[in-house]
Image (tube, rainbow, N blue to C red; front, side, top):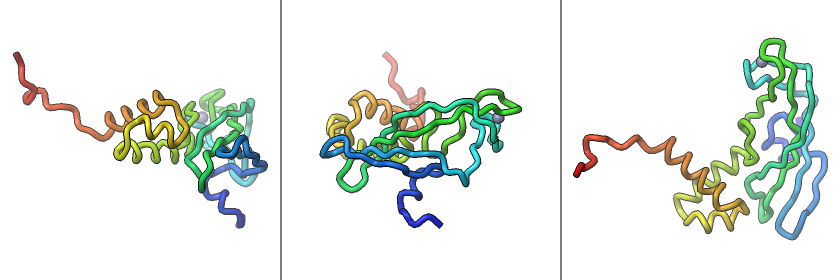
Length: 152
Ligand SMILES: [Zn+2]
């Protein structure tokens, strides 16, 4: 078992390098964990053939007093069923540059603070926070009852 607590946060990856970008921001470089087989995002099957790799800059929820920037190698797999597809990363859906953990943290904060304050606090652009909040509202609130909307 890995003794570092950081291995708990980014399933399938390990932290190989870190550096402070400024007094508030810590950049963590991740590499794929050799013990974890990549999984095709199309069919959810294990796939061992890697087509190519590109690095994605990802924003993560704060750790202690630091904003966290992740440098993540995202593999494109050569799946025998689906063809070239991205690997499934549980904590980083689709093409997102915001981790699921930070998205959940922002969703919690926007129920307590104005969007501008949340954006300043977590270091995301106002539009990014607004988009996350809008997606939360669309997901969590029921559609309005058309019968109860007054007509002129
Ligand atoms: Zn597949």
